[in-house]
Length: 199
Image 1: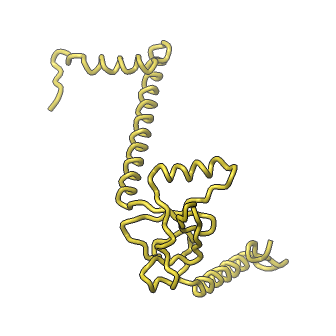
Image 2: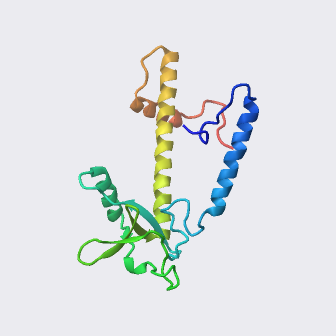
Image 3: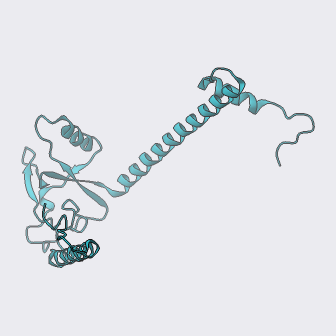
């Protein structure tokens, strides 16, 4: 390893000061690198949010599936089935965006067959979908996931209550069906004499 990863502390040197010096030096290298960075090339090379695509669509990179790798093919097929579309090569600028098209540094064209030229970027297809529909689908998926988690938590809590009750009574733990029936009966019991329920 180099001293850029692990600072070299000389014999007899104050280790505290050596760590501080190394951290300051690393910070200066980051600052110099950021100043030299081309602002047209984002940190995430698949982030094309500033490329000039319409704001009504969302563009994502999808790995070009390798032959004989089922997981990659399944991911690509999943995107196709979810109605993601390939960005056509005709939407990409050839002169840095001066022609009003999207400017994607490093983009190349790929023939899907039949003369359908699409955009690739470092081993990824660029694919797009309607932003509003995509965000609605994400919200629905998130809501379903939250409901599922809440249901599982509720079932676990109810089962835990049944286990604690059966241990108090000295019997066998209640099954989920017994627990549901038990809770129904409790909800149906009339108030005892003199007891007032509700506001």
